[in-house]
Length: 385
Ligand SMILES: [Fe+2]
Image (cartoon, rainbow, N blue to C red; front, side, top):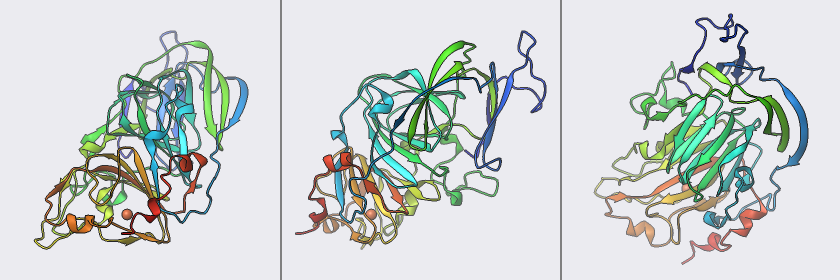
């Protein structure tokens, strides 16, 4: 996050003596990315953050390809994914490559009896249903319907849900997730033409410090394995921190759409970028206002990107038989576009209420068996009259 933030108590100068009430020292930790070149935060712990008591079982949670070479357009019924009590168990990868894993989750219970850290990937959680609080070692972020939550890799967290009715789109990125560089100035500040700005971000707040020792179960995802570690101190024992590397949230409802006289290309909807995929937000907006404009998108060729569109709410003007939670997959190599009749029907319309999240990956995606289980099977033929 190209934004400085701090919470709690920190010493006036970094790497200097910072004592607890009992006269002993706090333990400073640099939490950084890309070696020492990326964004980082400095945090101050009550206990050594390095105290591993035991290393227990390791579970392989890496996705397995049911279709490794996909050329079919697909329509996955996302809400057919069954709810599960445990947060991590509920997360089901449906599409993946070596850069990004896209999954769906319907967790019923809060994650409270262990701690979780994804050491492989930045996580982008999109909250389709549910409210709650993300609890991290750097503070808390309340969330609600429409929130994107960006959790940098290595961040220790728990998640609390207010009810059992939750639906999440889970993106794990092996490359750092940033807001698009072209929206920002030389200093990193979001420019006037950006569809959102710093004021729209929800930053960590309400830093809680737990000065506790004992047995604390930490599940660490690394190299596709879920390692079970026992730590000797409470992972949320930070008394203060500052820096740039921290989780934050942004509501899709705060994305201000860019419109034009004629059809605007997908990059105007871009919300996040990585070196391997982009994330776009399609939000309610006025349609093109040229008197001869065709609001529905033209047919377009995905020559070098797989396109994943997750349908959240509203009407989906260029698609037929789409419902909430559906995912369309338009693979690289073949064109796709509006369904028969929708191109013509869009003429004269003045606005759309569609709400959707798009993920375009630069490498082809593989499908898991679960993706095939919720695939409608005939979508690739849906452009036939
Ligand atoms: Fe498309």
